[in-house]
Image 1 (cartoon, rainbow, N blue to C red):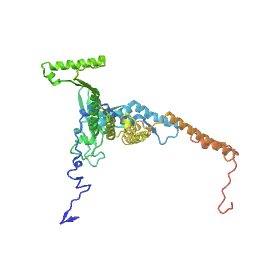
Image 2: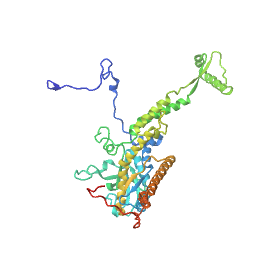
Image 3: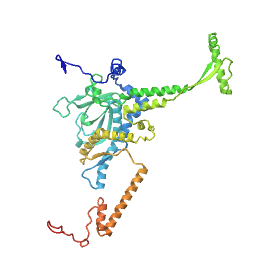
Length: 457
């Protein structure tokens, strides 16, 4: 809609002239999100080392991602023994690389610093700046985790040709290594020998507050919960100070001002209070002047636990961890068990396994497959929720009852002459039989041919 060729301005939202809602007097209008200062490495390390909760925020998710491990599944393997032999080769190489521990550290340093790389220590007769040739590998028994701070970002050689496959991605990484003499030297490493692990992703267009290095690698997971951690730490610090003054004695002393005005009034007053305290401790009674008065003031902690719990909820929302997992506290509410929160968290961990961990494992598996000339397996993560002994017993009981029902059904068919024993055996155990049992000739009645179309029944 326009008037005189000009577009009329439009405003959306609720407003009330009488109450000031949505107007200049509305305090909400002055609540804005200001860009926060990105935490430097020293601040991040201080939080990680000195604050146990900060350590848990960084470490908990990677530990859960690796807690139950994974399985190797081969598409063209039917025999269980052959499957186990092929899987064992990958298991042995992974164990020799100490892969779970190394990748666990890589994810932790990426979450702490914003990024990290895993250097593949495969010896193929080439220098680090040359492409890795898996078929020429002589030994592969080392993985090295290097955090973002040891990669000179301003010296990374990016692929600038838009016609190339790795356009906009690093071709060589300048990695700082510590020498035997204790000094540090920078060496370029080809991208085929490096696996990247990124921190909390941010929009690439955030040029005002973030550097190119921060936009590429990501930010620390402590960035968006730093203020809440500080608030929670300050709250507990205040509670600790208040505990020291939980009960304070108050003396009302006659002519206190006159006593303090004397040359030695301060010492006289201090001696008098110490004597009263001493008598209270020894005789459990207090002797006071007729005009003196003593009473005890006790601090109240009512409502503090509710405030602390709200801070727990805020930190839980900032980190993505449920309260029951992050703090180990029981869920609130009469009928609350926290199971739904736990299952949602497990779903989130499983998603992170598929999107972040699985590509890294597939890269290493692909190198091993080319190195040994063997089949490349699929990787299936084990479920995070494991059954208790009670649940296992109940499931076993259900299976036994089901097997008994099936056996009784087959026995009834055999007794009625509907089925032969060897047929029941095949139907029940066909997954474990090497071949289909064939009855001897003459043991089964001849099969009657199907009636042709038009024949009467």
